[in-house]
Length: 63
Image (cartoon, rainbow, N blue to C red; front, top):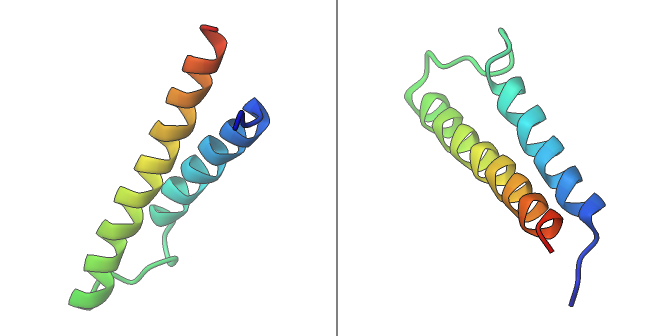
């Protein structure tokens, strides 16, 4: 099944926006250990989404 490049661009955009949102002041109060850990998980997931979307776009451009 071939997916649209727009989907991969959207995934990269959402990942980058989520990554940026985790660094905005007041979005996550990392004073609590559980929130600090979930912030690390959110950063990891957003970085993965961004890298995945960009890599799929790169692969589709090479075809």
